[in-house]
View 1 (cartoon, rainbow, N blue to C red):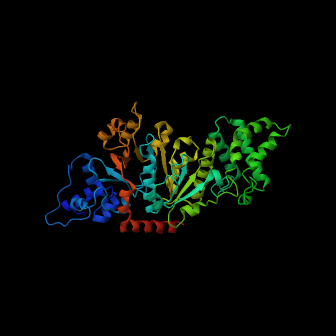
View 2: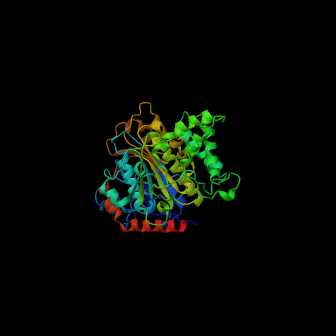
View 3: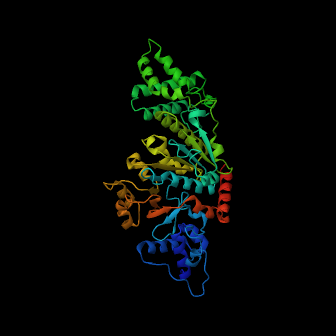
Length: 477
């Protein structure tokens, strides 16, 4: 029979809940059941507990007691079990730390984050802080940088030291990834690849019609067949794919055949996608990039893929092809724990339409260990799927005249009185402060600076957590 909770245990549970620890971590730490933790959490939500109960007379103080918390340096979060999550900042109401848990032990929440706010209020800085925290937990990230917010010249020195960024200048150096590659999970081989390439071009170039889409698909299939990769011969699918530029050449060949019924369609399709081949970003002489080097068992890094300098349509096309390459890579490895975060710092540049790689990441990324961090300035930049499939939202100051954002936020918060007040809050937030919704609770949070995080990162229990992450990655590999 389960023993009743003592006053000391209730106090410790309340303190740990406030610090963001999950119910399983609390149960293991205190020797109680997850159900008892849930019961205390329910009382806390309903307001039954207006303040933590006093410890029993003579009870010793723990690292979660008020006395020990006050002993910590001001402005720094108390020492907590690392499994409670990634530190975001301090709640402005009582200066307690707020955490984001991308690897929820209960498995109910997805790891994705949506960051929204006007320019200059802290989106990129907050993203950098989260990425540095992830790196300290040995979780790697790959950033698609369009606006040079993550260029070597603009990065905070603390971020460089903690995240160990590796820069890829795609506009200058190109990249040695081939969109024609067939992965083991491409069930229909060449047909899957041809459809993926044609769909990507159609999303980036909306004027591509049904016939031009078909012409691109045909060109891809013929290019693969010309190199010996046959649609109906699975034994050929593992052969080295031909150069991606051959797709452009094949369309040109089709356009030059006077008797061809697709001559004009092929010519129009070639003209739409020609810009990508002018920049020649995908080439065998480009920068070598292996996802296994990012997601493998070694110490985590942060990769920054810099696309500044490319024409806008080329930026989107390159990003889509790279995302598909990453998605297929992790799918081939099978379902797994959190492996990597993908960061789109200017998410408005990407398509969220059905069938796009971003939508696939939002819906299915968690299953294969991929998290997504999306940042942009306006709510219109995100699809309903993005709002519905990001368990954590960080909203800096933003206009919300019609209350669209606040209504979406209030639907996700259990403290609805705060959620309903979000319309007034988010339009007046000072720089560096954000309305944060995570684990269905909304709070106004001051994003802690890199300097305030340094002391926390030096704690031995967090280093031990990073070592455990490395062990998990080695077992997954």
